[in-house]
Image (cartoon, rainbow, N blue to C red):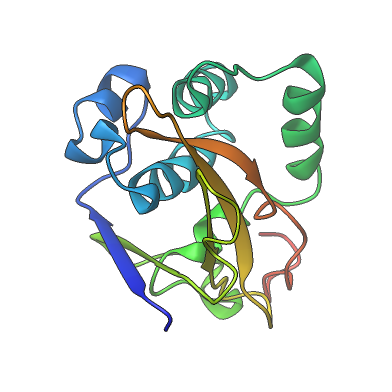
Length: 164
């Protein structure tokens, strides 16, 4: 049976200290790590270094490699709005501007828990027909969930405004 998990942020963190101050930074639930990833990568267009610091925190004992950083940079070459498309209220018509507070919902499916120690969550983008997944890995010694892999930074429908 599918479960839904909604996470709400009053504002998005601008740096690692702000991210760590959020209750979700406990990483005690997989949806916390997943939502914080979207929040962190949303910061990338304004401050790449801060976004990478936040993502490193969310990856736990497995920091970003240079390849990982290059992959993320490449995803922002043509459009900076992909992360915003996961928040409620965003759409191609409003240039993927989410409503505040920032709300994001993840879902499970029958395959979400098929690998022990991992959870695959799905999230809908307002610019895509199918949900995208993020995989979290549970650290046995702490019980925290860390970002393992994601397929969320892929192309979506462009904004209606070609100059957006």
